Length: 310
Image (cartoon, rainbow, N blue to C red):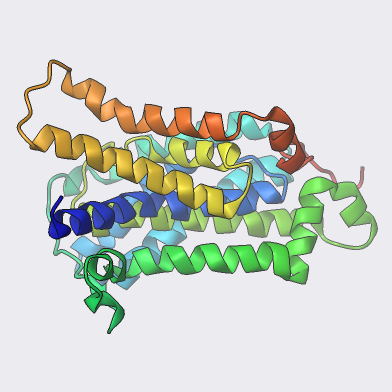
C-alpha cells in the first residue's frame, strides 16, 4: 500500500472518530456522577444546527463551536431540571430529550438545508507534521481534533488525579455518603450533566462545521447512540472510549473506501453503511464480555434519583 494512501486512511479514521470521542467523554463524566442521560443524539443535533447557523451567518468557527456548546448545555440543563430537581425518570427523560432534540434541529435547520459554508482549514503542528507518513496523518488536523486529545487527557487527570474528580466519583458511587459529609450532590450532578451536554454540542458542531460543512436533517446519523454505547462497553474508562471511537472511524472509512473503489460486490450499499455500527458494537461487546468487570466499574448510583432531604 502506498504511503499517501496509508496517511489518508489514518487521517480519515481520526477525523471520523473525533465527534464520538468528544461526546462519549462528556457522557462518561455525567455518568460518573450517577446521572444517566440518553439524550446525546438530540443534544448533538441541536448543537450541530446552532453551530451551523452561526457559521452560516458569518461567525468564526470558534463562535460556531461556542454556539453548539451553549445549545447542548441548554438541552442538558433542561434534562437536569426534569431529573435532578423534579426527580423525573432519567431513562424516559433522556429518550424524550433525544427525540425532541432531533425534531427541534430539523425544524430550526430547515432554512439552512444544503447551504454550504467555508471549509475550516487544518492546523499543521510545526516539525511533527513533517514526519513522513504519520506526521500528516496525526499532526495536520482541524483544531477540534487536537481538542479531543486534550479533552481526554484533562478528563483522565480530573477524574483520577484531582480532589474534585474523586468527589464526583464518590457522588456517583454513594450520593448519600457524599451528602452526609457536606458535599452538594445536586449541584455537582448539575455541573456534570451540563459538561456532558456542552461536549455533545461540540460534537454536533464538529459534524456540521468541520466534518461536513453543511447542514442536512439527520446528519448526526446515530453517532449520539454510538457514543452512549461506547461509554458502557468501554466500562467507563476514557482510553477504551478512544479505542472504540477510532475503531468505529476505521470501519466507517473502510466501507466508504470499498464503496468508492468501484469494486462490484453483490452486497446492498445499505448493508455496507450499517457495518461500522454493527462492527463497533460487536467488538466492544467482546471486549466487555466479562459482566463482573462492567459491574465493578459501573457507578453504583447510575440512573438512581437523589433527594437531599432523604
